[in-house]
Image (cartoon, rainbow, N blue to C red; front, side, top):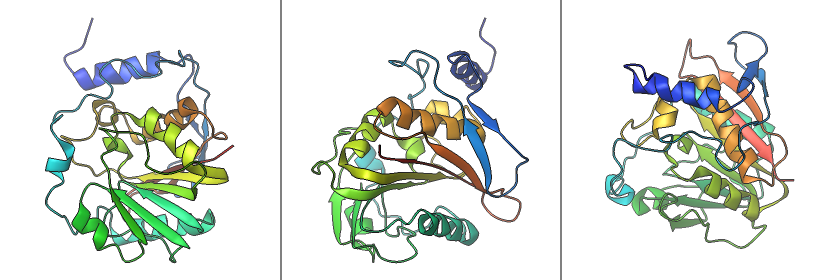
Length: 246
């Protein structure tokens, strides 16, 4: 029987779709603790329950983002933590920033930065971008780039809006060079009407497992790594999941 809380029902459905816990975290909720991600043991064809990718507002995404928003969606300590992670992972060379905006939070400009997003004005204002592509990943997950075009693909605080993420991350694997890295960072802020229902129904550790499952199900990646980079006591919390191209 369903409970009165549909979010709780969906969270339970997600966990029931796996034979083991989605995420086993060692240590307490302190900055930088490493999490051991469990393998996906549910059906590979449908690791997410029905309704997971529904949204309250399923209207046109380009229309929603039509007006530029020259704001940051993280506070300064969290932005610094994103930049520090990019430095640790040696994000350089040719970089693709998915669902990008007017700032990409890289510590130094890479050889090239392709900013892909929905608002042309925001992308044009990105000082590190060497090229900009207006592209709606929910309408068309196929990336308009050749195979093995990039050394890194980034997604900062936007993975929760993807309605076809496994298709997108299969494309990320295709455009990454061998050994290249896919990096997702996220916090506890979002546009709730545009975030998928499964994201809103689950907690931060489960979000790590969700993003790891996107990569595993897409294929072409080594085992993902998840870390809590900031615990949120003095700033926005920050979690990260990354995986290397096999």
